Structures are given as C-alpha cells and as structure tokens.
Image (tube, rainbow over all chains, first blue to last red; front, side):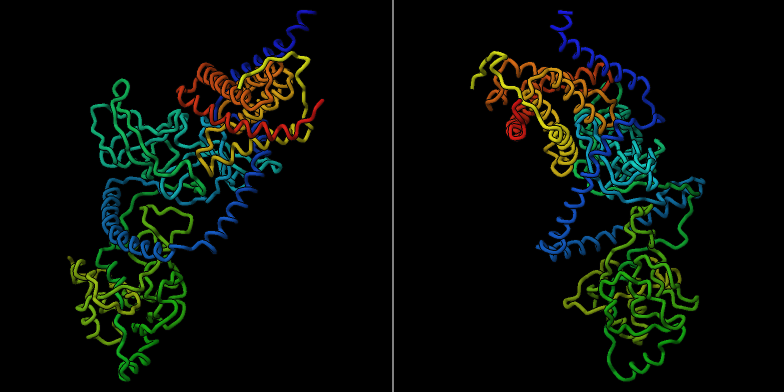
Length: 468
Length: 172
C-alpha cells in the first residue's frame, strides 16, 4: 500500500494516458464516414459555436456600419475602376462564350452528360478547428438547413472543401457544420490541369500547402497553369477553379511534386457557398446564338438624343403604343445603371419597347414581348446564364446578374450620324445595327465628347447581323 | 533570471473558483477557434496549453494538473476532425509535468514562467508529434526553428495569461 501511495500520481497518470491511448486506438480502427458524431464533439461544438456566432454577428455588424456608412474613402475611384474592369470582362466574355458554345456543340455530338450546380446555400464561417493539424472550419448552416456530409463548399474564387460533419439533427444541437479544407492532409480532390489536361489528386500537406499528386514525372507542367476540378471525386462538379501551379519539382518515385496556390483564400474565409444540389443533363448547344463583340458593343452604344423638332415629337407620340414601335428614349431615372428591368415590358402595348427595356441582359426573365415586337428590344436572349438566381453559380462562369448597365458610354461619330439619319423612334435599333457592321475596334474608339446616352437595345440576332 | 528551488512546504498552493475553472478553459478554446479566422497569424498560439500550464503551476497538484490538461485537450480535440485524444494525451502530460515541476520550482516570477512555457510547449509538441505519427498515422513535419519560435511566442503571451490567472486564483 505504501508503494501505491507513494506512486499514486504516477499510477493515475499512466492510467489516464492508457485510457486515452486505448480510446484513440479504437477510434483509429473504427473511423469511417458512416460513424455517428461523438457526443463529446456535439458538446464541444454546442459550447463554443454560440459565442462564435454572437461574436461574428457583432463583428460583421460593426464592420458593416463602418465600411458601408462611415469609411467610404476611395469608393468612387474603385467604382470607376470596377466599371472599366466590367467592360473589359464583357469583351472577354464574348470569346469565352463562343468557346463554351463550341464545347457544348461538341459535347452534344458526343452525347456527353454535363454536371452543373443548380442550387447553393450561402453560409458564414464562424469558427476554426483551433489546430494547425486539423484544417477545418465551422459554418453557420447545418442539418436543419439541409446540409449533408460530403457536400462541396466553394467561394466565388474557387473550391474550399467539403462538408465533413453536420450538427443540428437534434433540436437541442446547434445547426452548424464542419468543413474540411482542401489544404488538410486528409483531404483529396480530383483535379485536372487546364491546358495540359493531366489529371491528379489534390492533397494538403502538414504545413498547409496544397499539392497535386499522381502526375507522371515525364509530363511538362508550366508554372502558372490553372488547376480545375475533374469531377472524378464525386463531390466537386467538373470545371471549378482550384488554383494555380506555383512550383513544379521532381517528386518521389515517378511523380511530379506540383505545388498549387488555392484560388480561394483559405486562411481568410468569411462567406462560402455550400453546393446543395448538382444536376446532370445531356449537353445541348445553346439555343440562342453566341454573343458577339459587336452585340455587346451595340448594347453599350448610346442612342443619340432625339432632335426636338415638333415633327419628330409628333411621330413619337403617335407611334407609341403601336405594335412594333419603339418608345422614344426619353430620359428616365431607370436608364442609368438600373438593374431592375423586370418591369421593362410590364407596361405598354404589345411590341412597344419602353425606354427601360433598353437596359440589357440583367437577368430579367418575365414580361417577354409579343412575337411581333422587334427583336432589338429583347434584351435577354444571348447572354448565357442570365437570370441565374443570386447565390447560384453560373455554369460557364459568366457573371449573370448585378452587372451595372453602361450608361455613360461614348459613341463614335459615324455610328451617331448613321443613327441620327433614321427616325427617332428607331434610333436605338439603328445605332445598334450600324454598330454590328463595323469592326469592334472602330466602334469602341471614344468620341471626344461624351454623349448623354441611354443603352441601345440589342440588335436582331440572326437576320440583321452581318458576319465579321 | 534564475529559477530558485524551494521546498514543498515553502510553495504556496492556489485554487480557482468553479466558474473560473470552467469558464477560463472554455474561453481559451473559444478564442483559439475564433481569433485565427480574423488574424491568421495567431494560429501559432496555443491558448488552451497556456491555460493548462497556468492552472497546473498554480494548483501544484499533479492529479489536478493531469485531469485539467486531459479535459482541456479532449475539448480541443472535439473541435477538430481528428480522433479524440491527440491533444488530450499531450496536455495530460503537460498538466502533470507542469504541476509536478511547480512543486519544486518557484514559478511566480516571469522569467521562470517564460522558460517553463517554452519547455512545456516543446514537450507538448513532441508528445503530439509522436502520438499523431505513431498512433494515428498522420504525416507530420518537425522543424526545430518553427517549434522554438512558436514556443517563444507562446511564452511571451503566457506571461500575460499567467498574470491574468494570478488575479483570479485564491490562496488555499
């Protein structure tokens, strides 16, 4: 007994350690995806996440007040830069959409089935695992919101990880989820190099880097190449951005060691999208033709302010409301930067193109004009993914909503003069049609003086478009 | 600053109230899980470890130290996706060691606390490394510069944490 008393502390230590090691060994042996969540995890998550949610709310509220109402320095310049960026991206969109259309045609020919994200759920990141060896985060959506294990988690920039554990099935539990990040060493993502089309497995390393494995060492992989999901893991749909290759070196055995910088900022995640539904369908070419540069430019071309002569005004008044007539581009508060075109066709006689109908392609899906209406006034046709609900991810990666209309565009003199040669009721269409017949570079040349403008409607897609 | 050896009778033993015993570790775990989201550089700190060392050295009871360390570690494990016990075992060892050393060493001055924290940080990391690699089969990388620099950073923070704990501890 003396011995037991003397070494009591040590004996207790050994016993406690032994019990924990035993428990650890049992867990390692029994670890499987179907294993229910342990109660201790539920308790720990339940104890910590309410504070995390509370603090997160406090932080976002404070930050929102500061950034949205108080600290607006540089917003104008940033807005201007972003508008320029949007213009450049819209031109880039043309090339991409043509490529996509071609790919769809080929896929349809080969009877490919394509996956696309049909439903996502936005979630806030509220916590971290607290360990550098476990790269996982907690989000504020769980079982009660329909989140399930193995759902893909993404941001606008790229993939983030997959849902590992879901809490909240019990009413007493907090409805949160644990997401395993792609830079955790236990994660694995099927990935493919964009140009080289080499497939591999994306894994995390103990230090938190991301590497692409299983690419043979005799292959050439340039630094900077994009890495996309291959869809082979059954979690992430094909084609989502993963990151860029930052370093390529000979690895062990026959494979390359390819370091990848994740596209999503994994250390600074705030909001993520959980992909709650992925649909699969037969690839079909787009019904509407591809959008060409001239189409986009035509949308951006302003109409010329109508000459205010009585005769023209009279024509305007009389023609308004008649089928096939376009309403005069009178100044309207909805013209500039208005992204609410839903009511564009709500009022007015059939075929009448009201001024705000000239706002192009911002996701309006209702209120289609009658078949007799000029197609130049149908703004939604050719932009892929128009009308994708917010929170959704466009299949072709093209922004679908929220792009402000370009209301301060400038017009080339030739286009303006051509437009002004027709009646005021057809000015928008004429300008657009003229634009389609000119090289894009010529049309984009800025005029010396900006013209107050409305946005011209899109031209008729097939009939009037002249091949470039 | 030199670490002075004292006899068991000379050292003072402290205790913590029940709310402090529960809330301080929970707060440490919560901050550990929340702060690095906003400030990723804070990932190098291990607040639950500092609280474990702080409690253990103040109480100077090996049994209390190992149980406190074990519970804090298991709670920390519960927030990860790895098997429960990795941090539990590591912090059990640290809790036991810190309280055992607290009996023999004067841990009231900041210098001693600084050195003790570095020591136990490294012990904790070694224990974690062995368990994670040997038992769980995780791929682990060991880097002395990283461990030492993290140990120093934790020791600096530890001095502040122990000063806060000094304010809530009660003499028995």
